[in-house]
Amino acid sequence: MSEIYDLPLSYRLIKKYVTGVFKRFYSEHIVLGKENIPQNGPVLFAPNHLNALMDALAVSSVTPDHYATVFLARSDMFRKKMIADLLTFVKIMPAFRIRDGYATLGKNAEIFEKCIEVLEHDNAMCIMPEGNQELERKLRPLVKGIFRVAFSAQERLGSSRDVKIIPVGIDMGDLEKSNTPIIINFGEPISITGYMTEYRENPVTATNNIKNELKIRLENLTLNLNSEQYYNEFESITWLTNIAVLQELGLADNAVNRFRARQEIAGRLVALEKENPNAMEMVASAVNRLSEIKKRYRLHDRNFDMENHTTSKISGCLLLLLPTLPVFVVGLILNFLPFFVPVFIRKKMNVEFTGFYSSLQFGTGLITFPVFYALQAGLLLVITSLPWWSMIFFIPLQFILGKWALKIYKKCRKLIGQLHFNTFRENNKAVYEEATELRNKILKTVSTTK
Image 1 (tube, helix red, strand yellow):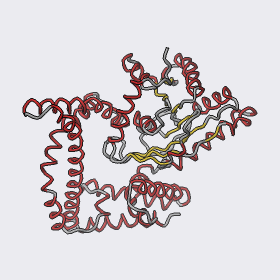
Image 2 (cartoon, rainbow, N blue to C red; image 1 turned 180 degrees about the vertical axis):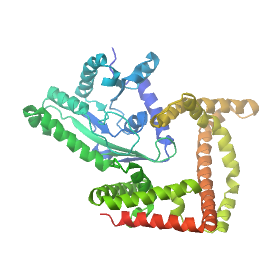
Image 3 (cartoon, rainbow, N blue to C red; image 1 turned 60 degrees about the vertical axis):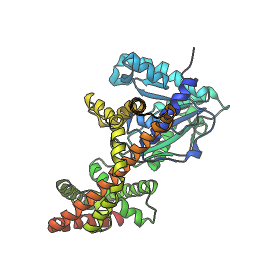
Image 4 (cartoon, rainbow, N blue to C red; image 1 turned 90 degrees about the horizontal axis):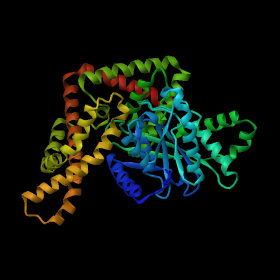
């Protein structure tokens, strides 16, 4: 009988395909701290949890191929046998919660034993230590399940091997859309053997201490907008002041440094709310007023950060993009169905929680992209006299053209947005001056908060 930690050829091949597509789902797949992943021995990956199955795929996309990384997921995903069989094949086991009914909690004993068995065979478990998923970019209280597994596995292994917990911070540019950066940040391992003496003397104290250590490390690896009252304002400010603080810190403009600048902003805001609540209230009021203006006049934060190009210069840039129009049109036509069928299916499923959007669209896209690309390639063969082997080049070419079409679209949208901003500035001088004053007030507050 096969075990969940076995690595059959079918699983290896599918993992390579899924990982390859996952990396291309994002505009940048950035891995930090990869050297902190052990090449052998029992490992527990502990990532923050914002984006359903995409968080698990983020970890799986980096872990060594010889590791069988097994995941835990909410048990209600296993209700239908076909889906349950698929989840088991991709090494996901159910975790039962009180909300699933007290009668189901007994099943966790079997799952718990399987988790330990995975570690005993020098494989990896991935357990979300927050225990649930939310959309807010802040660390939630950690639950004890991952620590129970870690200590129990270490007791079984004795001093022969060291169970390690690897904190993982995952940050996505957008939790719903594709083609934004993803940063997967692996922290230094936490050695369980270092806590075993304390655990034998007082399990509760040892669990609380290691929980606190993991919490601190995850806070350093993630964007932690730790505010109950001003969370929305915090989030707005991190985007609004991102480029300004990036420049203040003297960092180059790239995805990693933008993330680090947002971490710095979050830390300053947490300190401001704690040390000067009146100032925080004032800056929150300014943010909300500025948000009203941006919403009413359809403005974007990046418009304020862009160079003050004239309308004629922007129009000239748009004209320079005209030669790329054929590439855009062809890329759009060839990728319309692969891109939009997953969105259509997701909308038809009436999924209310937006944290599942990208998981559903990604999962559907795993099928729609190869199917539609193959069908379109076959149609091209039928209506032309091209040799069959040309399809080897045409199938990936469709995806490449789609990526180029998306880049052209984003560039045009950015330029058109700046044209719109110029028009707003010229026709609404009083409102523009108010918006600029509000923005400068927010920037000044953030830049002087230490």
